Image (cartoon, rainbow, N blue to C red; front, side, top):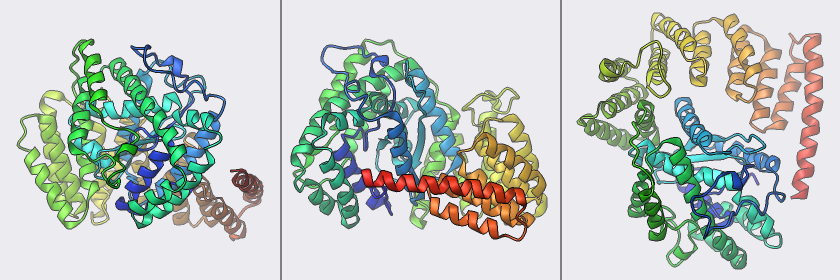
Length: 533
């Protein structure tokens, strides 16, 4: 399945995901199942909508779903349009998991994890993958005018995940399933030549299976709308954000804009007036809620805007957008623009300008909102301000004295925001930058034991060991990073290099041998699994 979602550009990303959507009855791109019982997410209206997730619970286990999702995510993380930016990822995961927690029983009896991430794409779109992986396009986050609007889309995707719509598709269509999955792989490859070619492959002999899936998809969309509404209401968000964003999506007409003419009836998630009317009827029954957006929301939108297009024209357009935003009367929006200009200056190598704009952003929100009080709250912008300040001071063009200040700020930020993974990684990088290799190795070893799934910790540890001249340990750390990336042959190769290193100890040899046997067994099992697919 690795070829299913492996885009090499924004242009190829979109048609590939569109094909995936048609094959798997997607939400906004790819539906996602998870382990949650559909019955735990009660809908306000039980009269017209079946509980789609119940019928297939035994057909695709949560363990298999998660494994499939992790396999796809390995390819996505290698794509150049995957936004590997820690402040953005941290915000999306805090925000998304807050929505998950607001849904009654959203984690279900298996306590499944959700992972939220962003991809660089101007379309207003979001998608979910098997196992609870939910992605948002950069264009979607930039276009959202409030956290309630963003929540309306993410909650919709969580609805697809919690209802296990892929599992139902596979469970009900045992006779058809191999056809769409096979055409999915071919269509994803054909997407390299354009969406028309991909659609041609997809439609070749698959019409019946796709028709059945699309009939299910429209029901799934209505169910995800309703579950998403419940999640928003329980989380205290303004539910009018659903209709507001649906209207914006409908007006933009960007979803599935690349489908060939005449195939619009195949859209798996039509933004119909019926769906909008249904949401409006629900909203009328609920009391109006006012929710103040977090400052982090405005800062993350600014950061994503900078990263979305870093070409020369893109930078000019981004600067113009921020300068326009500076004229807003809302101080959070002004601070977001100033933060964006600081980040834009940093990306352009203007370190003095970056620091100046960051100082202005801090001052804009500091007087009344006190974002730098000792008892800071989640989402108040303080951690993101601290992270950008450290980032500016760690720039390679900075003198050693300024880089030393970066370490001091990183140490203070780590103490103040102990749960921030972005700050923890910056602290390790600041230690390495300031030649504190023993401290860095000690900190990273502790962190890698606590956060075993973070490949970056192993990469930083390998970098530290290289600086210390500990070659065997360097290769052993790189091996663990490759394991997390799903590159088992490369991991085994790194273990072999570690075994041959001149400084390898007897204890290291024993660890290497045991780990190599384990990885070889996993490789063998993966090959057997591929034969069974």
